Length: 111
Image (cartoon, rainbow, N blue to C red):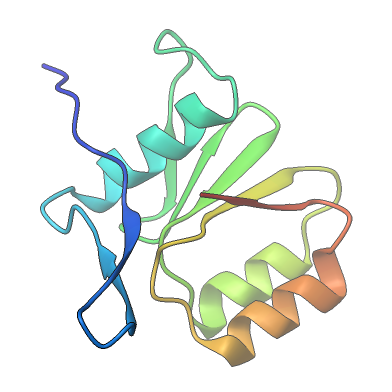
């Protein structure tokens, strides 16, 4: 069963500090599914886990939900797949910079 939820959004508090209102109740698979739909895939295309709760694949695209050294090493070995990241996910700056420097032409950030 599928259901809709509100998209994450930036908010400001009374002091003007930025915060994030997100849907933390979504499972990693659901987050990857949302990324796949936002990238133009349809529900009839299978979404397969590469690293459970971290990285998923659908056709020529990879959907990054969480990044660690194992995932980063795998992504650096890929050739032609587009890699989509949720712009509101908590991804370490070090991993992001490593991804951006080696995969910049295939990396897509979705907000």
